[in-house]
Image (cartoon, rainbow, N blue to C red; front, side, top):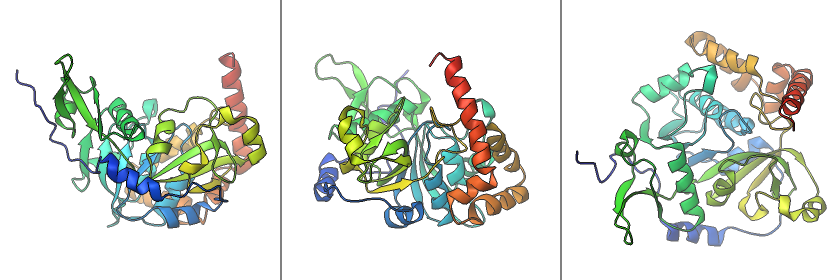
Length: 336
């Protein structure tokens, strides 16, 4: 059987390391106060037509507040990195309704399904609509694309994708190792225009701490041209300097710092609060009925002015404390 030497999927972004470096050279590295509201951050740093990426994994440590605000501001024709994205992608798909087109191109790896909770009917409608251009990748291939960007390379070779239908539907190319003459898949570097990452702590300059697994966010922060940070709490720069080894994302990567308590809700925030399974189920249920879904979006996203109001509608601090207790029980059960 003859294997294809090049995938047929579209490449949505320019993998040129030289062009990316030209952008980064102009980006300020000064320690300036970057605190602002989520509304202001999305207005300033998310433009129509941008390539957007979201940190965290699935429903864990996601920047829900930024996703809501992007939908609320009716951003248009965004490209999206579907890498370890479930509820955040589900939220963005709410922008592809009633003539609106928030998403136009998607690098598809881990989307639509919310793990054991089931598939998102709205995300499925969007992906099957024919209105969104799609390129397929594996989760690992997307992570390698970010690593190539961080290394200042236009691509990296990898064994993943080889011999799969995913390779045929990707934008990867087959290359030969000059040393061993083995076949490898070359995956192009990915430099998102803007990304959003939720963290446990940040100072006002954007030096961030993530407690626990960082997934690909170490690379995502460094590969992104613009970066919006939402954080559970602001801490002092003195505290950052006292533990420099705890800094996961340095300030020079960051453009905006938004303090958003419970900012991953209804997703999980490791060590802080468990995911709200009741509300996530409600999302999946109302999406089956388009009229009920529109009413749901009006109540929880379009009809509120901020993420804080959304959390209040979902039970506020009382509900968060219940989820916090559940998270602590989960930690104790695992011997943490």
